[in-house]
Image (cartoon, rainbow, N blue to C red; front, side, top):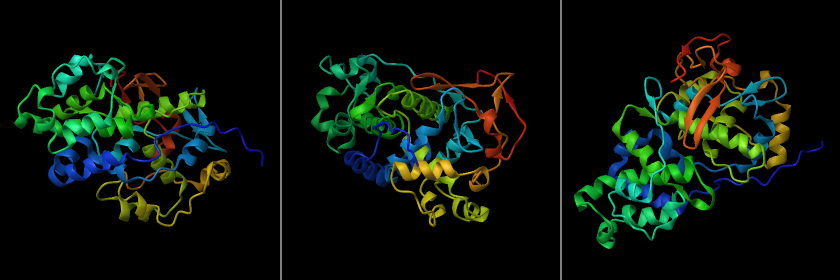
Length: 339
């Protein structure tokens, strides 16, 4: 078989050890609060990356129709599936409109004084090491007290938000060379207030990353860990009861491994490409049976696309082409375009 050219697309492959250490401390002391804020996102820390699957998937992405096109079927990640994996609400929730903060406003949102020497903030990013030293370390306030504009008691409250910024910036909305997007401080603040959803934003950036990488961008700036889980769950055909028994309760990312227990995964980009190319519509898992049946969000008014608000701008989303993923062949709900 003649293989296509596989670009050397870069992505998150390993979780930064500092983030793992930080999560162990958070899980022990504020695990419930973290779960309420981030849902199943914290479980991404334990996912093992398969970058070969992502590189193979890119060969099947149709950047015009915003779907993966295979032998005789199409697939695309849906809001319902992403929300189901993460255990986060998305219906009757407002999408977050991100704001790029000035260096001063970013630091203020983190309870810190203005620091003109932090040139990285002028470029729109901060480092994980900076955040961990000041908020992850138990002695962070004492070690950097001159940098804070808040009391030690208030600093304790900022620590969880700082971890959320670090997690989202490292694994969900990653930038090249481990940089963390400064806009995430505002996103986390909005999440903490309640009534807002991050699910459309996550999906928007996955779709955007797929399109950009198929057009030559070197770094995948979407959540490749989540895309990987989504794909494997669809391409491993199994009895419905497996999903019901092993996926009905608990964190869907954590119990993903038990659902995939007997899946023999292809090894390497070429093997994955052949595997995906040979699958037919009768050989995949169309519906996640661990996902509670709900009316699907299909389209806005009479428009083909829904416009999702991503971290880096508006992104079209086309679920109307893949109704079979929810066992539907006709639209069941029309939502307003300002969803």
